[in-house]
Length: 87
Picture: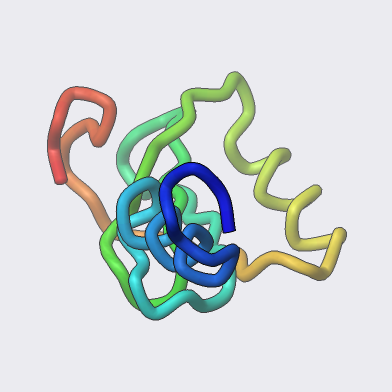
């Protein structure tokens, strides 16, 4: 226990739900946003994205993530910028 009165498992579950929009957990997904050059969505499990990163070479980063093997890499159809609040 800590000062919050929550167990480590409760803190972990709360972090998943609050920070990562993923109360049920799941695999970490990296999704190249088709139609939006340089933006990659991040999500956990089948949940909505919790964030977006802007990179210079989105295809190269996705390939590196795929080669790492611990991440689920894919594409997502999207017509608008996630960084501008599009989700």
